[in-house]
Length: 234
Image 1 (tube, rainbow, N blue to C red):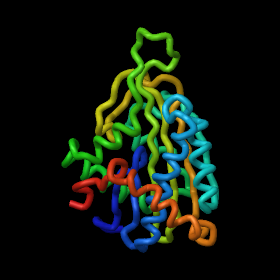
Image 2: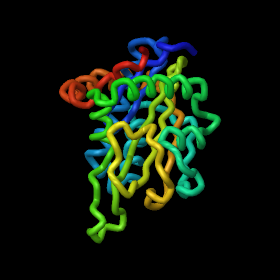
Image 3: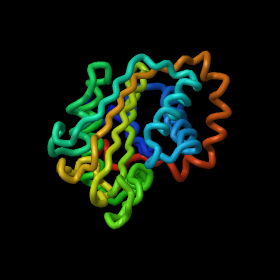
Image 4: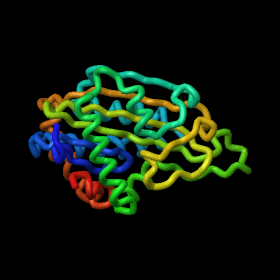
């Protein structure tokens, strides 16, 4: 794959990477469902305090819209097992065989170009606001002291298959907005690092009757929750 073949955007708390050869309809279907399902999950459960229930609701919404679940994997890893590393590095180290390996390195390069050249861009700020929870002070009685991170990565491949990874953990101190490549230390992680991987494919017969309503429902939400990553193809 060559530079410029990956289109990148932030959709609420998801980094979405799309193969540029996908059709406009395939791109819009995936993007709308990625956003709508997050909103549906957040309507029922708190993303940062009820992450497991939030994720279950998110997945149920995807399936309801006609995305067939091909396979999935759920991991809960001690921080010492993963060792010092970044969120992206942890993702790569546990990447299942059913996820699109051919897109992983190109997506990483595109994301790195973007955040390293323009760390203060609106898309980075949007992702931080959506994926980083509020910092819980150490002087509270809350067991999960620190900052909860709940971040999704979506990959729409050339064949319009959608793979989604979710990474969630709690960090003892506040993270920077461009935290995805920041090296984190195991002793700064509270509890385990949870990783969930899903391979999905859209069944057009199910989604086609829903497409218009989903798109219309998002008209007022896209401007504030969807933003392209600048500099990714520079």
